[in-house]
Figure 1 (spheres, rainbow, N blue to C red):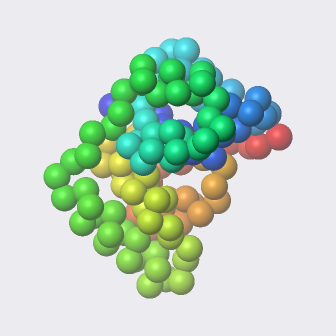
Figure 2: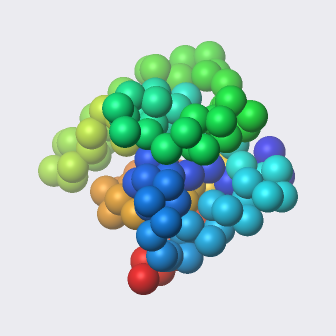
Figure 3: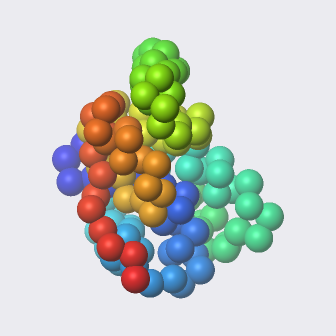
Length: 132
């Protein structure tokens, strides 16, 4: 998926709340240029928010969802185990989002520093941004 990027829930929430940050600008640019794809768990997390911005709901219906690949669950579990064995924080949700991006070679926009462990040890590509 050349030139595509994905965004974690943390960046989506910042976007929906009109917060500043390079990640928010890049998310908006990716939406406008049709270069944004969405990991399935991000959709679930966003739609679970009782106070979700209706604009985000509409965008999620229009954007392409990253498909779950064969043995996705196994790879996500093994990568999470690697990080836990190294005594790093590795939430199940983060492992699933990271694995979606790894499987499709799609860089991830995020404000969550815990994804750096998935980058260092599991092959996740992160879009380097600064939050203002």
